[in-house]
Length: 458
Image 1 (spheres, one colour):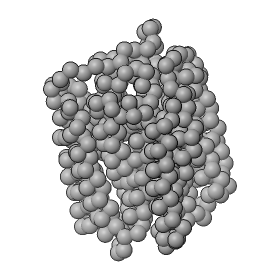
Image 2: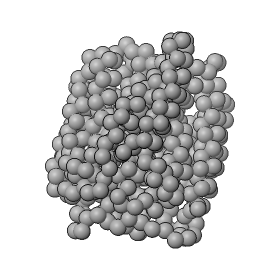
Image 3: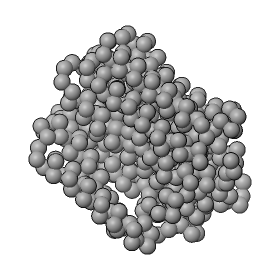
C-alpha cells in the first residue's frame, strides 16, 4: 500500500523542545477535561449545585472547545501558529484563575466556557505543527507520543484532581485543580515563545462565520437537553431542543455546501481515510468519555471511595494505553492498517467485562483488570487511527484536517458525558445496575467503531 505524507512546512530543523511544548499544552487541555470528574462531587457539595449543573461544569468546557477548534486551527494557519497558540494559552490560563475563584456554579460554568475557548485556540496548533514539522517515521513517533499524552492527560486529571481535593491545600478544597494551571501556563508561554515557529500555512482557508453561527447553537441544542433532561424529568423544551438541533444541523449542511470556506470542506472529506478516521475517533471518544465519567460516579457515589482513591483507580488503564500507544510502531508496517480492527473488539470485550464487575460487585483488582483490558484495545487502535486518517492529507488542508480530528475527539467526550452520564443517572435500581447497563452500552459503542475503522485500510 502506497502512502503519502505532507512535506514539512518549516525549512529549519525542529527545536528539540518543540514536541515537549506542544504535548504539554495538549496535556493541560486534557487535564482540565478530566480533572472535574473526580473533583465533581466536592464541587457539587461546596457550591450546592445539581447533577445537571455538575455535568455542565464538565461539558461546558468541552462544548466550546469542540465548537471553536476548526476556527482556531484556521487562525493558526492564517495568523501564525505561535501567535495563536500564545493567545489561546493566555486565555486558558486566565480562565483557569477565574475557575479557581468562582463563587457559584453559574460563574464556574461561565469560566469553564471561556477556558474551552482558550483551549480551542491553543490545542489545534499541536497537530498543525506535528503535521507541518515532522514527516515519515518522525511523524509516526510524534503521533505515538501524542496518543500517549492523551491517555496521560485524561487519567492524570483524575489522579491529580483526587490528590489536590484530598490535600485541601490552604483550605481551598477543589479550587487548586484549576489554580495549578497558572504557574504551568506561565512557564509554557515563555517556552513556546522560544521554540514554536512563527509561520503558518499561507494557503490556509478563511473563516466560516455563518457555519460557526449555526454549528454553535446546534451543538448546544443537542447537549444541553441531554445533560439537564434527567434532572428536570425530561421537560417539553428539551424535546423541542433536540428536534431543533436536527433542523440546525440540516441548515448547517445546506450552508456549508455553498460556503466559500466551509468549516468542513467536502474536498477534505474525500481524502482517503479522513471521514472514516473522524467517525472512528468520535465513537471511540464518546465511549471513553462516558466510561471516565460514569466510573468516577460509580466508585465515589456507589463504592464510597474518596476523590483520591477514585483517581488512583484509573492509573493501570492509563499506563496500559500509554505504553501501547508508544510501542505499536515496533510491529511490522504491514500490520498497521489492521490494528484498529484488532484493537476495537478487544476494547469492547474489556468494557463488557466491566459491566460484569459492576453487576456482581467484584473487588477493586478485578475492576482494574477489566478497565486495563479495555484500554489495551483502545491503545492498539488509537494512534494508528490518527496516523491512517491523516497520512494522505495535503499540506494546504493540514489545518482543516487537524481541526476536524480534534473536534471529533472533543465532541466525543461531550457526548460521552452527556449520553452515558445521563444513562447512568437515569437507570433505575442500585448503582451496580446503573454501572452494568452503562458499561454494556459503552462496549457496544466501541464495537461499532470497527465499521468505519475497516475503511481505514483502503
